[in-house]
Length: 446
Ligand SMILES: Cc1ncc(COP(=O)(O)O)c(C=O)c1O
Image (cartoon, rainbow, N blue to C red; front, side, top):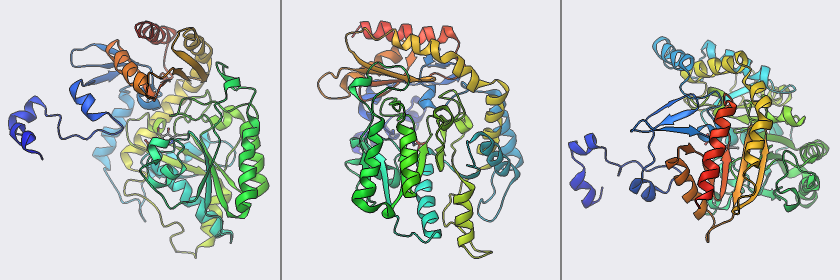
């Protein structure tokens, strides 16, 4: 602690609320602490600040509160679970809800992605999937497959594996990894600007994977990771035919195809997973966020029975098959939250609801296209991004916009100069209108 802080760090500072100690993630800390954007309560589509002002949630928190905020059923289930069984070691011990949740997740995943490994975040799901890919190839006698392929502008979380896969330069430039990763080109093409849904141009960009197979030797490549819709870098919807082509190239070269569905999972695209919306089934799906409606930290990796069984069968009977796991893998409270969340999605048909609302939502976002600062809009399902012309350095305008939007009553996640609009799937037309109106008025004032 520095001298000046020591002077204010007494008991009264706890009462008045010191802001010095908390180092905030992915935040301009000094800027925030000078002009804090605090919320103290949430309900349904809204956050509330200390004054009781309503702030509409235009990004489902961080694209995770798909069923809307503060669902009583989830809170009750978590509370009940913590009273009944707060924790049990997930290594060599079990509890019924982790098995039950795995079964429910497997019912939602496409194809035979029916084996589920629990983790605590999207980042952990990525590093877990990378390890499973390596373990699978080793089990098949192909230990040489250690290289990974991902894509420019990819976001796969912040652990070292995910950062190595990452295609967002600020997330990688200071964090060196020894992993061998080749990055395909991203799919944000001028020809597709302002196109709703999937663009016509760019399927051939998938051939970068074929080039890598030739350049590095397909026998050295373990897996290709992509977000079906690149989320954090601005809702990059895959061009028509692109994911199909990746699937075909992976099949040809026995490269595992992994869809990172941390954002796109649990209804964002109108189906449980984007894999179903786009009709392409990967070998693994990583997920988090919406699995518990963000009420508890949780993530998961769904893998095919083929991958699972290969890893199982490679180990001796009675031996641990995969030397990987977290203390809180399948935590009882997270499983309780997950089970109720999936009940809500099903009971209220929230994926169908999002699918039905999507045209109205996309119309509302596209109504902003004539603003002089707007350079591109993309969208699919209940997810869209609006790109703004930079104001000098990249991200300056985006940062100013997100602050002003909040002050005007709208929470929106910005990455650089891209505003990510992804309301909870409970949104009514009036909420969509409210989001568009605040965006419109705020953009006008810029
Ligand atoms: C596609 C994708 N993968 C991984 C992650 C990392 O998830 P977490 O922040 O839970 O670690 C995110 C987070 O936004 C994401 O969008």
